Length: 320
Image 1 (cartoon, rainbow, N blue to C red):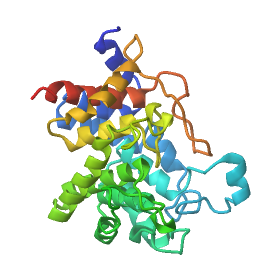
Image 2 (cartoon, helix red, strand yellow; image 1 turned 45 degrees about the horizontal axis):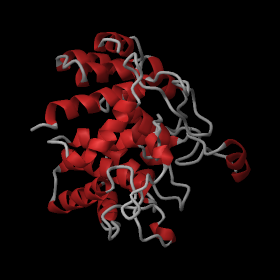
Image 3 (cartoon, rainbow, N blue to C red; image 1 turned 90 degrees about the horizontal axis):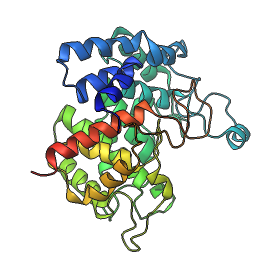
């Protein structure tokens, strides 16, 4: 296997959105240094490219969830579009755009003023009815300093009896979904850290985490079989999708001593590491994007960054 140093060098020879996270999460660089690198997201690379596509009213592609004029026919032909406001804000959060920057503050103001959800015209920062969408709105809102407490209260009241969440609840589903559960857990983690962990948030997170842990992040509770082979294949950007790495990265972000029920998922993560120490981008979601960052089947800096920080957390804490 190639030395970790060569992989780190490869990660650093990248976009500011990758570099600052490598500096913070893998190299323990002093905060002033990684913050200086993070500030470049606004003016260089992928962050600047995404901001360049922003509409004058603060939105992207003229819509909250769907681009303006994106018909069902286009969806069937091209796939879901990932260019509208909610997905662009999600991506800027993951890039690390400084929420205190002038452009970020103006963006959030304009989105609140102009963007309305496709479902029923609800103001963007009020959320809508689907748990996955509302969870990602909470995550973005917390990141950019918006009060999203009413959406959090709604999510807390929508937990399923088995401990997780499912965005098909409004269509009658009474069982949780890996996809929706990871979106909500990420939102509650972010909200709790920003606003304080209430007993209700702590209980909801424990229930959602137990839903995933009981299933080892990948298996059906009754059958023991892998729920979906796509959970074992890594993608980025993941949008609303769940995979094993996203689940592991959530538990890493939550911190603490790793639960041993994560061991099978960690072993799977290790099994996918290539001989040179990197991981591939296994697949990507169909549909229009503003630009491609990586190529399916090729080594992925996003996957490698997330995998290495998960393994670092596991190796340093699992034996406690």
